[in-house]
Length: 183
Image (cartoon, rainbow, N blue to C red):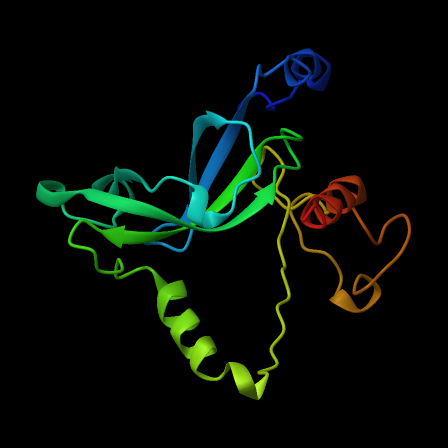
């Protein structure tokens, strides 16, 4: 069994506090061909950015199954900007759409069509909701809180549960929730 991966937050803290000398880290995030997220960082002068202010960037789409090897440039067009809850202010997270070199939306750019439909029906005030579910896995690839070699009891007592034995890794869940409120 592989050794558990640990993070030394105390080591990281001194670097997070370094003076950035008027520059920021902009983390461009996009959705790949498999529905996973990818990202890469660039350095920009410090200022308040809107998506229109940010530079279009590119990446090798053949490495993410978003383009063939012979024409692999895929362009990242910024569409939303958020304060970076991980690196702290003044750094930002940039959500980006993927576009092909010929100026058409990448076939995995589902946001493009969604925006067109939402704009078309904006006066109708559509209602929809999102529920973000996720599972935290240990270094053994098993969900935290599951009994060794088995499965937990039916979700009844766990669903919206509070307290020991019902909720595991609550500190991570709370940190994630708080980070999502940064905007």
